[in-house]
Amino acid sequence: MPELPEVEVTRRSFADRIAGARIVAAVPGKPLRWPLGLRPEALVGREVRGVRRRGKYLLLDLSEGLLLVHLGMSGSLRFVGAEEAPLGPAGPHDHFDLQTTGGLLRLHDPRRFGAVVYVAGESDALARKLLDHLGMEPLDGGFTLAAFRSGLAASRTPVKQLLLGGSVVVGVGNIYASEVLFLSRIHPATPAREVGPRKAKALHEAIRAVLARAVELGGTTLRDFSSANGMAGHFQLQAKVYGRDGLPCSHCGSPIRLLRQGQRSTYYCARCQKESRHNQT
DNA sequence: AGTTTACCCTGTAAGC
DNA sequence: TGCTTACAGGGTAAAC
Image 1 (tube, rainbow, N blue to C red):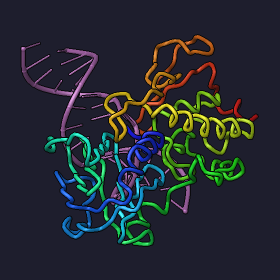
Image 2 (image 1 turned 45 degrees about the vertical axis):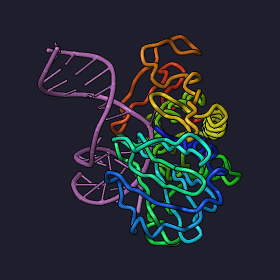
Image 3 (image 1 turned 180 degrees about the horizontal axis):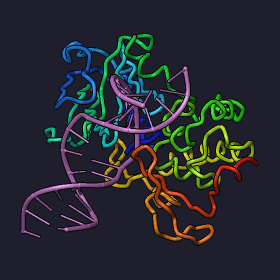
């Protein structure tokens, strides 16, 4: 579910409310992708100083160490302040509760591809393994066209899969990858290094514009995503190609096609998004 | 070394 | 109505 916009919307929906709270209890449920990495009781008494984001990870800065939270495919967080109506007991798909003096942060994750991992610091070996290989932050100033182009030039992987991989730019998942390639009129199977300068510029702009717009709209809610406030997103209403196979392209009217790339679905318009030769421009 | 494949897990929807 | 299969917003490790 959660790509960069959903993770960022989640972060904004509880970061200010949890900041300054002290951990009262940490209660794991069923095993997630990785073990927590320390005894849950050891977290008690630490303060949550703030919440940052790196790619699709949330980083909860504690007075000592930090918690890395990843939502995987089906994860979502809920936060209810101490003054609000309590969330009640954990359900069958609630796999981590962080009880604090400021309220309860709960991870809901049916497929359990998500994770909550404690690391002593960002230079910790595990933290480095998870974070160091991540590419550029698309909404930061460091994500320049020149840097993006050199990232594309270094790979012959189909551009859709390179975007998904996160080694050049982070946060573009399966929904937004289809959308940005449609907007920049690039065929998803084009080898990354064959994306020409004009197309690369259009793609760079589309990534920034689409992700920023999706954050503004509260993310994409296809099935069950909601922010930590329980708010659904609305970007799905703007999707031009994702999930629309067989329906007419909004630009040219020809039917949107479905392509399988590395066991993931890609949606595109065969007429608007031509093959690599035409991407040279 | 770069690129592709298999797999982690559960729920839902489609096909028979 | 059931049973089986395929697929779902992600990411890693192992295999090419």
